[in-house]
Amino acid sequence: MASPAAGVVVIVGSGLIGRSWAMLFASGGFRVKLYDIEQQQVTNALENIRKEMTFLEQSGSLKGSLGAQDQLSLISGCLNIQEAVEGALHIQECVPENLELKKKIFAQLDQIIDDQVVLSSSTSCLLPSQLFAGLAHVQQCLVAHPVNPPYYVPLVELVPHPETAPATVDRTHALMRKIGQSPVRVLKEMDGFVLNRLQYAVISEAWRLVEEGIVSPSDLDLVMSDGLGMRYAFIGPLETMHLNAEGMLSYCDRYSEGMKRVLKTFGPIPEFSGATVEKVNQAMCLKVPADPEHLAARRRWRDECLQRLAKLKRQMPSQ
Image (cartoon, rainbow, N blue to C red; front, side, top):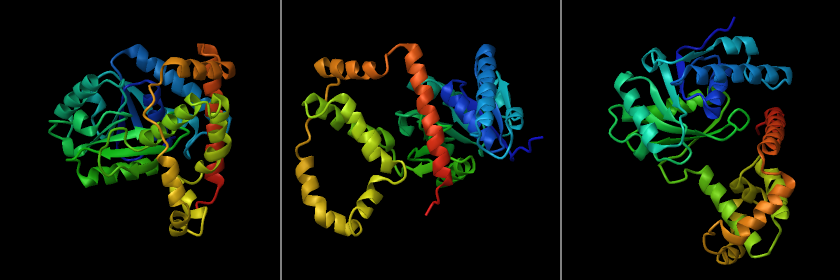
């Protein structure tokens, strides 16, 4: 039988991200309560998790030291939020990306939690100062933003409210490490956090290069998938600089003038509309038609690739 870790983790919202969080925490041996407002949503989520865990075990990709059945035994559904939070050490909110809805949930939780539990949001774009304003337990609140799909992409951005206690961030960092994720500390809130600011910078320049007729949409994606992305799967842009010369000081001495010259030629923020969006859409649909069946199949292929890459990264020495 499963031997649960101390305490309970509560997932608020049983959609894709909520289900992924439930699986991750169960893989770490935690008891998980999956809360939602409708029984059918909870039932569907638990069945989806059962199928996914069974498949992962059969393919040798299940995380954690426990088998699928033991992990599944740690996850239960709950329709009463008061009952859900009893004994909780961590509450992970995963409701739709709507500020008023999230604020309503946190205000409700704020009334019923104790002074120990961490209140965490999965939001990808809402600032902690918006989400947690006025809460009595604001020192226990932060954003823990996962990357989709969280089960295969381990990064979690930890973003504190200006009044979040350092111990809250420390506890959440340790918890994420325990379930096999890779938490990063965003030291102060900023719109887009870190991942999306980097992602949008790449998207913006990619769009301009296509819009200006420098490269085709399909070749642009190849530059990333068979170029930059190959090394970025293992090292980041700063270490890439460090290794591409005799250290960082050498790189900046050698290449900074060229970088500044090129950066000055970057254009304005694209509109992401008009003729360019038609051109990009046509190229993408040639590769993956934009109907539900083809998109779902391609996402499954993507997730399998990420699953294999994650397995390879675990096999690689960290140093």
